[in-house]
Image 1 (cartoon, rainbow, N blue to C red):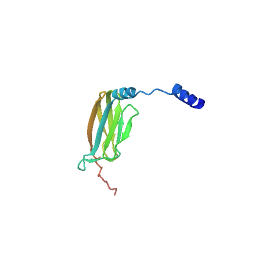
Image 2: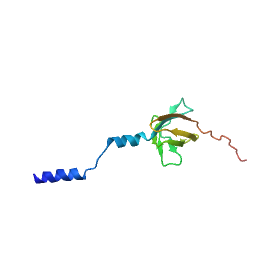
Image 3: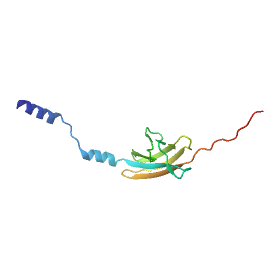
Image 4: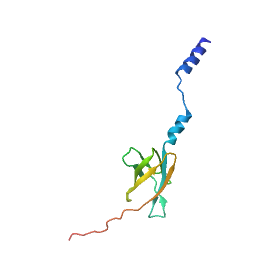
Length: 122
């Protein structure tokens, strides 16, 4: 009986409070950017594993198999950089994130042109 009381009292005294409201309040202070990266050359097919970077931050992600990506960010203006090997890199400037809102972006990437000028030395 004494052991039960000690366990209960120590658990009660040293437990940390957890407030769901604080999590919701923190989450509502952020906004969301969601989007999809598409291939401009092949019927707007999704580009899986494209790299999407939020410039001047540590945020970076890769698009999923369906070309989709998302970020949860504090309110502000951001620059997104979208890259995929063999395609032009795109910068999306002044992407405005507003607390509690979701911004949807659909970005098409163009394939790089190959230099086909071949000169043969005689």
